[in-house]
Image (cartoon, rainbow, N blue to C red; front, side):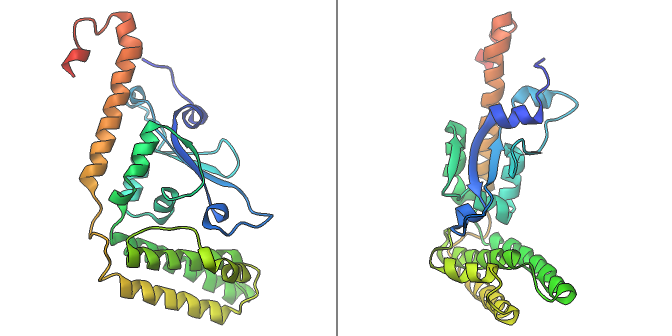
Length: 251
């Protein structure tokens, strides 16, 4: 049995894909912007043969770093989780191996009209928090308001085109004005409402499929897990003579 692996080692040694997210990926970075890193690691197969399973996600080890285990990441992406879907489309890739490249080749398999429900549901929750801030403090958290506008525009454009593009492009300056508190809250609210209505209008005729391609994603997961298990046999049991009788040949 392989020794235990720390969460930090899983991220350090088994990451298949990592990227920069947040303002830097969205085209909204300024001099004071943080560098938010997101990644996907593949826990080695032997870790699942224990009673204690590997973590589904790891915070750190660096500041502003968060990683998902592959299966959890795929599960969330199939549910059209906005943060996870956008992670697959970052223009700022920092680490990528052959499994990560196949993951990125599956980006289209996760996109469906389900994104309308999940993006808008997330936006509604965030908008309620902003409205509560206005009631309590007289103003929202402007940075959060900026990112909510960005998310709603991203959702609308995804439903219209069938493609997920996370860079804000020509909207950069308008959105940064919101972040700086230079746009009155009623105007920001009106902008949010318009974007949500445009997303609703785009949903029925969207070129996106009704559901994600779960079978294609599951095939990728099964093949990846099998390869990890076979690699374990190759590196450990063959050296010990455990599979000398043809166990690997029977796979």
